[in-house]
Length: 375
Image (cartoon, rainbow, N blue to C red; front, side, top):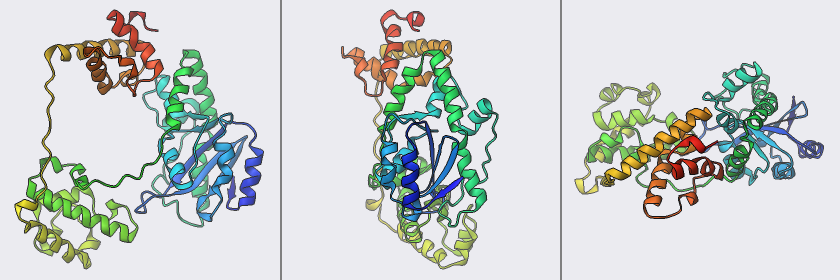
């Protein structure tokens, strides 16, 4: 295991990676800061395990020749979040991706977490001790460093086994199409919509007055979390906010009876500020209460419902034959889009969510009325 925190060392390592595969993973600090960041990149190739200290000021552009070379295969497990963070923090893109989670699902695995797959295919048991650790700590304890490299140390062996299974099942083309799609994901910094508070679990059953309190408490929590550079849940959890809106405490004593209220909040000046916030929100006129958007319920004709049900049944039959999750062949939303397009005489094959391998499997179901001709 080698710790890399100087450009010269990173440049030397990159020059030595002339072919793949290379296993990669990242560690971020999302459980400890308001805006997470990449704190560590684990990299394994040719039996070498490296830890790149991204907080040391490393010139991450040095990695670009390796990461963006499609001839050098990069192996990740569930790469979506890693790819988004690498692009957001360093502008790095991945080409030549092999994602072991995607591969596992395509060979029929239902338990496709890394720990489960490594135990099944490699007889390795991963520890979960540092899953929620603060990876921005420096110096990083040796035990955490060992934990970090365990995620990539066995990844290349796992990828070889899964690639062989994909080849044997004739599904390697499916996987490559999925990998290409995954390579295109990017982080998008979209502003939080004003009605974001309505996404809090339980808000759908609130009155408009309670929603007004929730809206104001969410804004207050966000400001406080940003100032303290901590995640939102470390200020107050969503369910605590919901309880506050329903119980509307008026005193510290009543506040202490709200389930989940942190003791540290009760002992400090934030308790009175929180009570003031609730009181001001309760005093708002109903003209300032949020208006819940009307839900538009689409009326679907009976024959359309029957068509969707019939196609779903054929999809499920085919999925059982292939030993795959039915949603891998087509999600509920895609099935509805297929029926809708067919009803309008449009080409369902151009639905953006559909892959070419899915079209190939679904086409016989729609053309012949059954899965017998699909392979």
